[in-house]
Structures are given as structure tokens and as C-alpha cells.
Image (cartoon, rainbow, N blue to C red; front, side, top):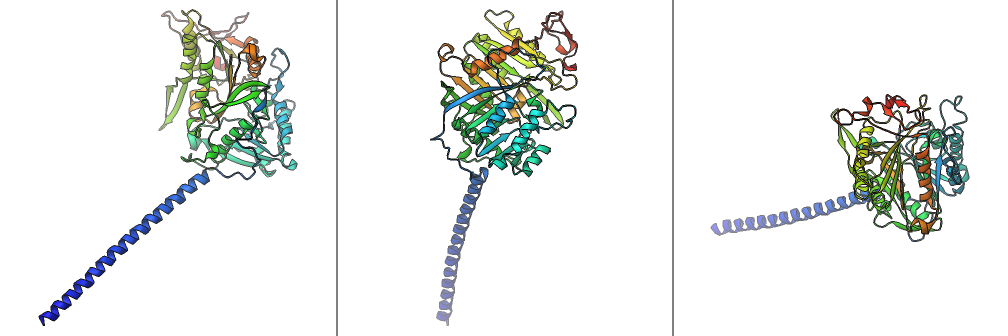
Length: 502
């Protein structure tokens, strides 16, 4: 009886042991399955991030990094309002409107445009029929691209533009960037890419005022597919931000920069040896190997040997941010310190031409006075600042506005989309182009750098460029320019009691 009971007990123990071993094996198998399933899910998510961040373009035109063209033609384009009396020196510059139309003449496959503003047709056609003509003609040409077999792709800011709605109805592909959600900033980028061979970069928006009432400057490059291919990568970056409220942390190599400040494209501009590259901002918009705008400006300023000429609408080295309803403003030193270092330590001549208009920030004058004070007791120090103002701005504050945004030195040139305001570089989207000549002026002859330099000197010597002279108080300190009378260097010594009242 005992033997039978013991045998039954042994059998039960053996069965329990087998059950536990099977259970342990089953648990290990389940764990392996869960691990494999987790790896597969992670791989799927990673693949989705990579392939969803940048689409695979289906309209390949055969241009690659290996066969692109770096023997280019470059031309300065400007818009100068008819009633802005500036002397014509040398051959007349190509007008901005003509430059856009020449680009459209070249279009065979595609036109890609980035602009924050689309207002080529003014609302009040009765009062501005002549000045709006160029914008209307350009808009009609864009409408007709589809009928000529040319694809039109547009990236713009969130805007309720009637022009964009009409273009979309004519089969244009349009995508919008919600910059408020992405960077708490704005889209300022303005550029064209035609057939991935020809490009435009400059200050002008797709606004009828840019073609008539505002003073604009930009560059058009023809048959320059190497740079066009790189600019197309910037366009692709924008294109994929459509309907996003965040910037992906993983991007395809299709938006990686081809050239930068450390590996600029070696090319020929109008048969002259040169180098060039593109820059972007803000920093979160700089894909792998892309140079920041502020770093591009730094390189151009650092390379200057004799002079630095700067023309911008606004100059304000400050960054403002709002936190819980409170606006916090801090000094943004990057460009301001570049200028100070160049003029004081290297003895480079600097001229800064700033627009003087209704939106000029009052603190601009404080920073100008601070810059000018650098040379008070220094020999071989030359830093001049003038304000460009067209007095017929009372009815339309953009009429005659100097909207230029560029920097030119004895050997290099930077043309961008930003004013030199800290908040612009920190949060707003923009693109810049750096061009550097290989040889000295005596060896290279007249180039686009000399053309831009001549345009600056024309504006600098014009009747519209006037120097700000701030007085000191009895303690030898500069008073707030807004509380001061501002004297202009004119024969009549005209005075502006309030700079913002123009």
C-alpha cells in the first residue's frame, strides 16, 4: 500500500516537473516573440520616419551631383521705382521684372517658387493701374505655365491669398508652412528654381510692390544646375513641412547640403573663377552640412580686406520672445560683434545703409550711435552709417522703401532674405547665397561683385542717404534719439523731430 502511494506521488512530481519545464519554455518563446515583434515595429517606425520626411520625387530630370553644370552666368537684378531719382552709371541694370520673365522664358519642365507673400494683383486697380501692371503680367504668365507643359510648385506661408487659390485652380501644386507652430517665427525665404538649372535669390516677394514701388535687389543665375540642385534640396525641405506642426528629427539624404562654407562649389561666373554656396536659417532649418546664414555672413566679413558695404531694411541686434504673456528682449551680439571686430581690430572700412521708414525700431538709433562711437578716438578707423529715406512715404509707407538685404566686400558677396535683426535669424526662415571671387580685382576685371558695389555706392551718394548725428547731453552721454532732434547732412540741415512720423 505504501509502495503504491509512493509511486503515485513520484508520478505526480514527474508530471509537475514536466509541466514547469514546458511552462518555462513557453514563457521564453513568448519573450522572444515579443522582442522580435518590438524590433519589427521599431524598424517599421524608423523606416516610416525616414521615407515620410522627404518624398521621392517622380519628375527626375536627369540632373545629378555628377553631371550638374558649374559654368554659370550670373546677373544683378533690381527694381527701382520710377520716382526714385537715382543716377544711372555704366550700363543699365536688368530690371527685376525682366529677370523673372527671362526665367519663365527658360522654363521647359518645372518652376518652383518660395515666397511668403502672394499679392501680384492689387485690390484697388483704379488708383494703381500703371504701377501694378508688372505684377499682373507676371501673374498671368504663371497661370499659363500648365498650358505649356510646365509644372508650377509653390511653397508659401499660411496665407489666404486669392492668387494662390487661382493658381491652384490652374493645377499649380501649393504647400504651406505653419511657421508659428514650427519655430514661432515667419517665412521670409524668397527664391525661384527653374528646370533645376536657373535660380533667383533676393529681397523681392511675389508682391506687385516689389515690381514697382519698392527698391529691391537680387541675383539671377543661368545654366547653374549644381547650385540649382542644392537650392532644390532647400525647397524639398520646405515642401515636406506642409501640414506639420513639428520639424522631424530624421531627414533623408535628399535634403543634405551639397555645398557649404567649408566645401564651397568651385565654379565659373561669367568666365571668372569663383566659389559659391547656399545658407539657410533658422538653425533648426539647417539640414546636415547646411551652413547657417549668420555663419555665412561671418565668413564674408572675415574675408574682407579693405571694405564692407551693408544694405538692409532694418538693423537691430536684439531677440525678442514672449513667455506667458511677457515679452523678453535680449542683446543678440553675433553680427554686431563681427562689425566691431572688423573695424577696430582689422581696420576695414565699413558702410552701413539702413532704411528709415515708419517701422524703423527706435532702438536702431541707439545701436547706430554705439557703432559710430568706436571710431571717435581711433586712427585708421572708418565706420559710417546712413539712413535711406524716400520722403514720399506718407500715404504708402512702402513706397520708395529700400528693401535690399545684402553685403558686399572687396572679394565676396552675400545676398539673403533677412534683415539684420536678431529675431529674424533666430526664428524666421530665410535663404542666402555667398559668392566669392578667386582672383584680386586687378586680375579678374568687372564681376557681379563690382556691379553690386556700384549699386551700393550709387545709393550711398544719392539724395536719399542721410547721416544720423546724435547730440550728447551735459554729462557727455548720448540721449535717446527719439527725444533728440535728428539732423540730416543736407544743405538745408532739415530736422526730423520724430523719426517714426514719416
